[in-house]
Length: 218
Image 1 (cartoon, rainbow, N blue to C red):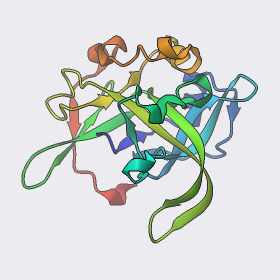
Image 2: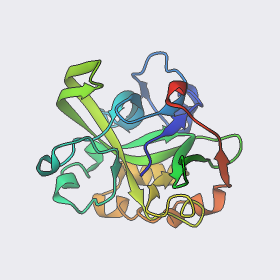
Image 3: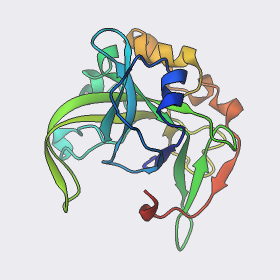
Image 4: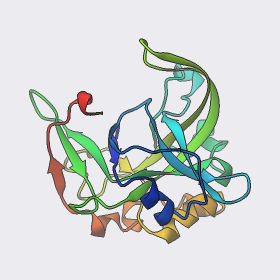
């Protein structure tokens, strides 16, 4: 499960690559380390049919029968819990430049970063978003009220990610055509992007970059 990623290219790059017409984020900082429950940029369909860049909090509402804990990674889109959020209205893309998985090593797990190239060009995760009301944030700084939440889809790990994290990897979008399909297509067509090798990631991902990342680097 991916619970750490980065976006370091800035809002001008996001607006240009993903054809964003409305930027609602103000002065968007760099995000070298994004953890669950933090605010981060997403791109979604606005009410006027154009695309907008907004802030949202990472972690969709989880199933009530399992305690309702926030869900960062969405794997089983056939579940009734996710069915109501699969239309274009609730689809989004999550801009990123790299994502991290942890190798199950002893005594400490090793963080391994994956990117499209050494200069970490911009790409996106296929995501979902929803408005929500309740308490989010940390125990020391809870935020009660209205929130806009997001999570991103995961799929079977490809040959590059699997040696580090065999269970799953994020659904990656690397071309304008893939972004258009995810944001605009009818649901059955959009959900065809559940195979990582359909998205160009198998060919363009190059190696893993290893370094120790502490939570203080947020």
